[in-house]
Image (cartoon, rainbow, N blue to C red; front, side):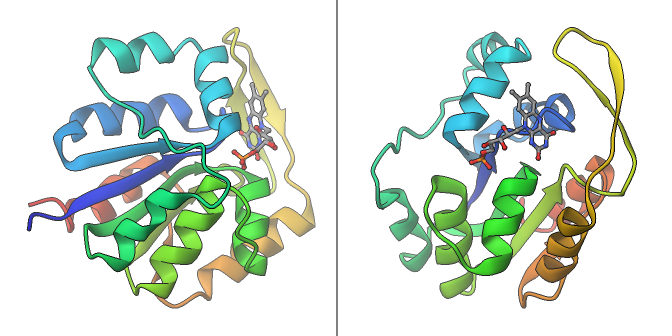
Length: 176
Ligand SMILES: Cc1cc2nc3c(=O)[nH]c(=O)nc-3n(C[C@H](O)[C@H](O)[C@H](O)COP(=O)(O)O)c2cc1C
């Protein structure tokens, strides 16, 4: 069985465009998941049409239990990528909460010993980001957000990267 990459986009605008570019590049190797907020934010940034144009399907899993996570135990995925990962998803993952599609994917990948790569939106305590209208803004993640990212770095099997190039390098190990 050829294993695929499970990639989940959460509701973060920061790094979103760059992540969609990587997804488009490796689309035949990726099963794409989105959180509910992820789908909204993709649309707000005008990137939904880009996914359609690239014929990138989003896995439709609106079940309360995130039924598609069973594929990790079945050995169908070589890696889980969460990119970009919101401070919300990072916080829940760090605390072991699994109540949304991204957090269930994280928990089930971990329990099946499938490696996980995370690109948090909050990579430092001061970030320059771009709004949906293209305006550059400063964002200042709080100490709690940075602490949660640090907690995630200590999880076995989890690699936390801080830019898209490092994400790409981590991903290439799993793409044949
Ligand atoms: C346009 C837009 C951009 C956003 N960008 C970010 C972001 O870069 N980082 C972040 O942590 N939250 C961001 N949010 C807030 C998240 O979408 C929100 O916390 C959401 O509840 C996260 O849900 P999820 O983690 O399940 O995807 C953004 C919201 C909007 C509307």
